[in-house]
Image 1 (cartoon, rainbow, N blue to C red):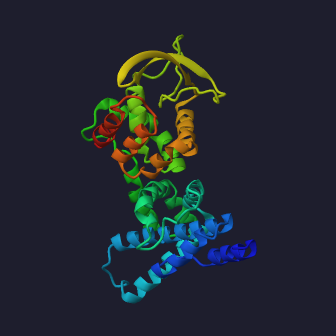
Image 2 (cartoon, rainbow, N blue to C red; image 1 turned 90 degrees about the vertical axis):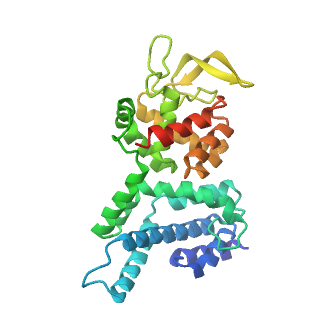
Image 3 (tube, helix red, strand yellow; image 1 turned 60 degrees about the vertical axis):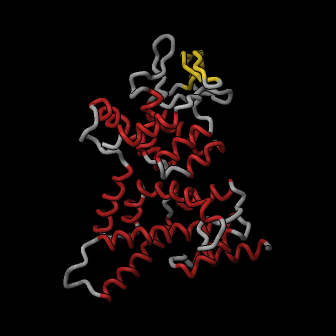
Length: 324
């Protein structure tokens, strides 16, 4: 396809947002055009469609009784949802950008939002589960900016809380304290990665022993390194040396390693977010961010830790300790 034709396709896609099944063909055609403009336009269409589905779900969940409820008002409500979705997608909430990055990494072999019968559907379903969670932290503000209703905003707020660990109930005091101290940082990293805040809190808990075994230098200096990230050759920041346990051929060995050091816990979460999103070895981890077990298994398979029980331990923390 020539550059001129590709640009024309991109412009057409940007003017027309696919909000129903009949426009799925345009989405696939846009991604297969082979240019950055067409891929971006197709990803933006998907973002608009996804937001529209969210708004429709929230509207359907609202009380339907009342004098103002009729087939006509439902139709007008649906039209309003579509217009709001388009306004949100034009401004962007991050989902389209994430899709473009993911498609680029996969050489744009197929657009994962293809209709029934596309061979890529099953393989990419997990990717969208992880990417979709990026919207939890941003959708409420986007709806307000695009002129959404107060009812939609309130419903979105309630939906977004499902991504944040609940405090209290049967949780142990040290778990509640750990969450209270770090949840804000985890939520910020969640917005940047699409990984649920609870998953990252669970990993920080596993790596640091709920904050009781944080990595410290030989002089007692706290590294604020909650994720056990080592200082590789390309690391230009501060470091500390500490004794750690590594598993070689399944056997535990004690070693002295160099770890990254940060000025704050917030910096630790930010660096973890960069590592997970920018290192190609963790692509499948991001794609499985919709399920705790798959996320933990993905980290272990990617070589994040050498402990053969790492995935089981992390899954247990997320599903049990942080589920109260």
